[in-house]
Length: 463
Ligand code: GLU
Figure (cartoon, rainbow, N blue to C red):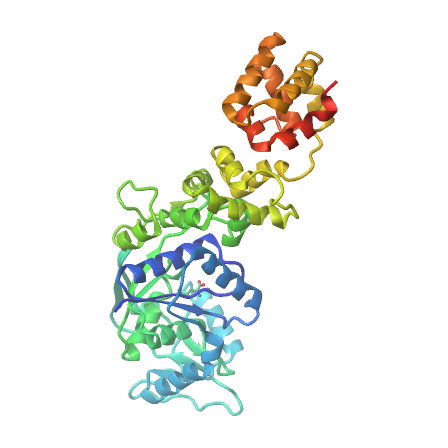
């Protein structure tokens, strides 16, 4: 049974990199009919916040990444970590170290002065035949893991291939602080063990933690999971993805008018591929997803491609479903879409021109509010030669059959009668009817607006 987990630290929003890790962990479990677990790594009490926990839960819900277990919170598992530390002390795989912070500083200083890498010298590490110093009175020790000194620790990373560290390179890691609280790597190990995680899929900023975690797992007699370390995501400009690149929080994409389908599809292709397929459904993704086709090189974020995917998903949505999303956005702006043209028809007419929900809402809101074309646009487009044609057109509108071909014929006849080129009438009509200069074909816009509103919007210009 495959069991994966997503283990974010709640110190900020759910960013794009975290979301991709969550998506891949989720997809791997779903592909194998396994289980996906959410674990909140909140032991950094200074930086962890309830708002950040909520942002993670919201982001995952928005992306539709459902979990089978959790969320577990590490802060609620302290007793368990302490229990395992006691077991390790009893088994001799961990030991108390009474070295003070000052002593440790002095040691590091001396090592640096000799040109050596600073590392713990093992002075409290118990060894056969070694006599340990007398524990100082009234000093609380840290607990260190008795890390193997010989040989190497290695794993076949499912993304990066074989990775090996010499044990001589690894310090005796502190697993509990003087106040007894367990440290980061130790909590991860106990959790992965207790939760029966079979595949650890995470960012490659954790590669250096993995040898320590594997050594502790082995000391506990635990089965070592398989590891897949995902390469980082770079911004459009090739530098590490950061706030500078705009929306890096998943929920910001929601706010900016992206569909979760598009963001999911986009994230799926950030480092993973299935042939040349760029567009695929969630079902196809979970059917195809594996760890063999994850690239070990960094993935580069491409906003244009995300927009292209978003537009694709908007266009393929049934207009009624898209209209429901636009209605929600317009309602949030205090606009009632109940009065005015049928929103699904409006959406169908405009969707080709707008690649985000926000742009679509921007374009469509003019049909549901009073509009006041700007004086600049009026001055620019409402020419003296256009005015009589507009008045004439309005007369025709009173009677014309309300369908696009008839309205198109009326526009044609009007420009012909007034000896105008089409844009001389079409542009001022756009401005008067929508306040905008960029619209779909003006006959379709007139049809959409409806006779009553069209006549009302032209009325002030009918002399
Ligand atoms: N809590 C860690 C992070 O947010 C992830 C730990 C892990 O996946 O092992 O970076």
